[in-house]
Amino acid sequence: MKLLIWGISNVGKTTIGKELAKKINYKFYDIDDEIIKMYGSIDLFQEEFPNDENRFDIKELIMLNIIENGEKNFIMAVSPIFSKIIVEELLMTNTESIEIIDTPEAIYDRLIIEGEDALEYKEKHKEYYMREIKWDQVASYNEFKNISKVDISNQNIKEATQTVYDYLKKNSILK
Image 1: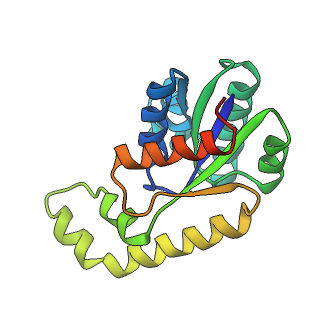
Image 2: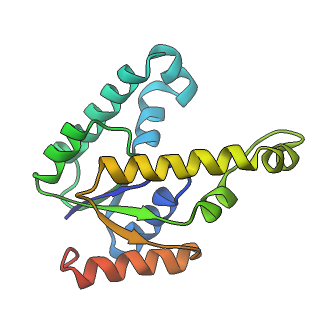
């Protein structure tokens, strides 16, 4: 099984994907990790491809290469940054897709801001971050309506991983 775990930033797709992959003994891929392997860092990648559209194209190529040439059984964490056409093509191939969803508050709590006054900065700009999270959720939902949703609202990683595992078993995705 080739499982793609979709979700907005900070929803937990990488952490859940890694834990689930360990639990079922699958290979785990994260597009950002693949970018770092190829370009040295996300910053260097962004410097080489300053245009968002070019970066998305490269990420799509990486994802498609893994799907076509990667392990027989794997889990991949994917941000909903890809074109709807690519997503629909993927959904028609031999992959399974789920989208992880959570409450905006839980996603906000996972946000990591670095710097000396990070906590103060984060709290000062909470309204902005909450608005962005909610916008991302609506945009993701509207763009990728055909992807099954798995709600992990306010669960810790262990609970969320089990919720995803149970969903996959119940829906005969995981044999």
